[in-house]
Length: 348
Ligand code: SF4
Image (cartoon, rainbow, N blue to C red; front, side, top):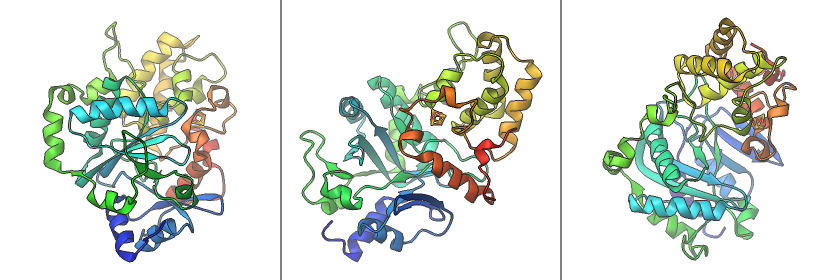
């Protein structure tokens, strides 16, 4: 990247703002989640190709300064196009980034922190309307206790820029903006007032938290919204047999916790799942115990390395593809005083 002047580095840092007390860093092929102050020095490292910087978008008070929709795979461009067109109807100025994996990141910036819950409502509404799926950053409405959530890698990343990746492009022609700095400097950021006006539109006001969770299924029983669950959890929700029901219940509770479900909602949902899907069902008391265990400690692991969970894993999972498994181990270590043991093996 040319023009990595101190002024441009500062502008870049002011646009891509997340938590200031933690960040992700990739250096020499190793990814770390670090709990330490983030400074312009780290942004400079990123822009000067010395390291890759990841930002945690979810702030400790449950707000965020940006929203990102992440599309991967062969249909990424088509899916992003549908969402972009829907979003335009609401005056949502998403910016297109060609990601490192040649997927698409759609970025929406805010001029002030807005609640992550509202940002995610915006995301879910346009995704539902476009009838496509994507990963949403921030991934949660609020942080689990002592958690950081998930970081996202920043654009304009070293060698990738030279290969036409991690750069912003014109959404119509998909040609890179010739001056990325000018584009980012002039980018439109929605104010809190803009967001409030958008959320008052009928389509958004009907997309309540209850709506997201589809609390009532067709037959009146609670139902889990599967839109942004990871592949293993969708498979596990189809029901499991004897031998892994305890472990699966615990991990499903962790998935629900990470998606912002309350303990009461998770317990109710998993009790219904148990009696309707598992053959044979577990004792209700075991479900209660597993869910409460998942919620009462700082568990964040999805069990990606647990032999009982691996049969439900899918290679297409973003956690797997992006190497987040190592990251989650590092993150849990930094959250809980990592002692060298793999916490993903912890059992309730
Ligand atoms: S990588 Fe982990 S989170 Fe993703 S599907 Fe596999 S087990 Fe689930």
